[in-house]
Amino acid sequence: MKKTIATVALASTAFASLSFSGISQAQDTIRFGMEATYPPFEFFNEQNELTGFDVELANAICAELDATCEFNNQPFDSLIPGLKFRRFDAVISGMDITPKRLEQVAFTQPYYENSAIFVAGINSDVKEAKDLKGKTVGVQNGSTHQAYLIDKLEKQGVKIRPYDSYQNALLDMTNGRVDAVFADTAVAREWLVQQGKDQYQSVGEEVKDANYFGIGMGIAARQGGPLVEKLNTALSQVKESGVYQQLHAKYFNSAQVR
Image 1 (tube, rainbow, N blue to C red):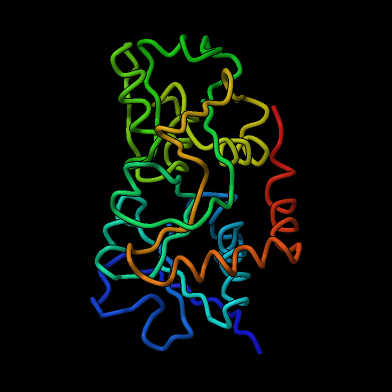
Image 2: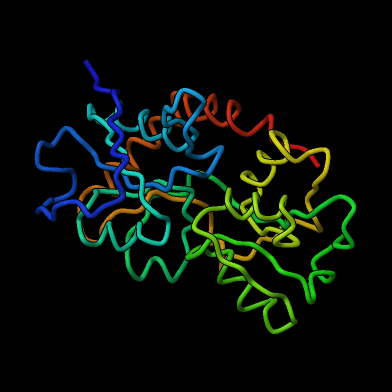
């Protein structure tokens, strides 16, 4: 019988450093790191249960590998360091596959094609990216979106304010502390559908730049280990079975607005 029960570790404190060859010592548990304030990819629902596209996809992958998923909730900018220090075995957290990250970790094949958009108030004077000059834009600290803003827009007079999560950046926008937020398209659209559709909208065209947002989102693992190949095989099986398509429809079709 395949094991699909997920265990959530809520503490963000450091975990004991152990020696793993790919999957953890028991060989039937894969410990995933993620930052769980990123709907629709990972978030806590009204019952305080960890869920989302990445969570269900990871569980489907674990089922193919006859393994149990364990999820560790960590700040996004600590995920790659935590992976390298063996605090978990892999990272699935809406993470873009980029050349810079590939220098530190290995990635599976892409499992989601990514882009980014700006979100601003419907009644604001920000209608496209060029209108952001002199404005303050919220973004998640340590993200590829932050790097893009620093390299492309900061020199044009855009002020960048980093946050520990996109949800806090979006909250500050509703409180008037930032003029716009730059985020993953799926995340921004999910927020618009759930909370901001009457007062906020996406601004300009979707941003697709492989130098920053890579070739899509992937599952990260340590370089040189066997786990990436196992995850790739299981991911292919999840796609072939139709489970991936069901999860994609569940989490993204309803967010395609504006």
